[in-house]
Image (cartoon, helix red, strand yellow):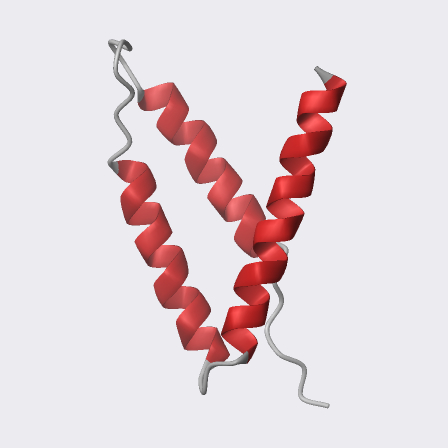
Length: 79
């Protein structure tokens, strides 16, 4: 289980880096991140897993992961 958690954390870090890289190439990186976050949250809210009667718990965990992912990103510094 620890190995799986480590791999998930590594994936989150990788995805955060990729999103930040793309955002830095945009004219307005903060707007890009905000729009991207909103799109991801919309996708997560529509998650439906076949074979599960109630996928609310999966949605809650996924929403938490999205919030955690975007909390790692900071606004560009003014330096």
